[in-house]
Length: 505
Image (cartoon, rainbow, N blue to C red; front, side, top):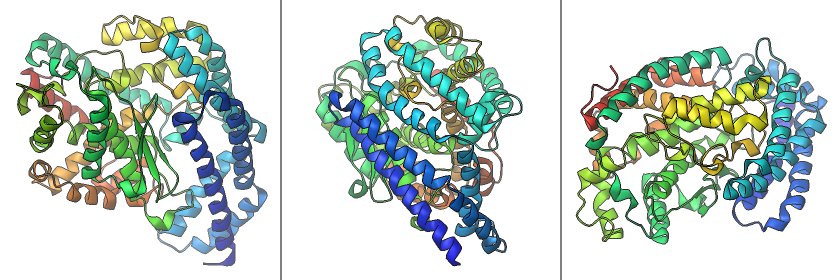
């Protein structure tokens, strides 16, 4: 390694440290910070973000990258150093286009808007949050304009989150999914009585739920020596480095799924972070390949593992011991079917596998419309409610369970939601490959042996961090670019069996 490349890594390490310090402050705001700390926290995060951006987007980093190009020219594409220079240059060129004042405004806007969103959600009063969302839409638009785009502003934002994917390509994916989902939803609706989920609403002690959930995810592979679980309004995962990756969950006495499956979901993200190669630490490579690839792990562990029959053949006895009264008279098969009930629901994070992508499609469309100016923020609740009625066939009773349910729009991060749908597709595609190579996977899960699955994912996905784009990663892991076909086949087979339906074929 030359002195130039060594110096580049020193600066990138400093930037990583600054960003992680900001992450600690953000975690504290979501968990333990008193309400009165918002203004001070906004100042702190804005200062850190401005320093981090200035350090990364400096002329010195550009000069070092130019020198490093020659150093890594003969190295393999997938080597750590060649990947570091390639990915850092992509990030650097985008960062150079963003004015420092805009970066500071974005950090401050998100910090200030977050508690307002929470209050508006608690009171089901969108008008409280509307001015802050208007500001965030404007900032998203300014980011898109600064980055530049040939066709649509969303393209600029999407290229930051899912490199190599355009808005038009994403619309094609959603069209393919709608053609599969709509008939499947209709089939399930005609056989709705086939699955009874009343057991999930019998009342489960919240403290026991939280303890059980943490014990369960540690058995899956979440290393609690390098993490912890806390409560928050909206569940999330946040990494401070390989030795400290934290998750949060939320809990409801009256709905079992919220805590346990929320914890499994976040543990999927956390195990990804914990599995990134340590040689990539304190560089731009220490992260997931994209939000979509990251979400593939939370959805894979939550749904394809956590909602499988084999999973509950292993865990149901311990669950009954934890909740003897709530589960009295309910056998393992009944419970497995209950946690897989499909029905149109208002809340995205509680949606079943069949209807979930319709929630994401709706948000993707609304973000585009706000960004392009065809939808005003003041009209968003009406547009939201109409879209829920159109796609899910249900009425939205208030903004708390409607337009205010997600935390995401309190931040300036349009183009993140599509990653949730891409995650479903990528997770199914990976699982198809895994089952081909591990024919006894269900037997392993039933025996509580999760190590082989985690090891496969660590070797094919986690260890590479951000070295590859999503399609590059999937070509390496499965031999194919990202495709919707495995997910469509998966839900048709699973829910066809659950509901005795033709499953939309």
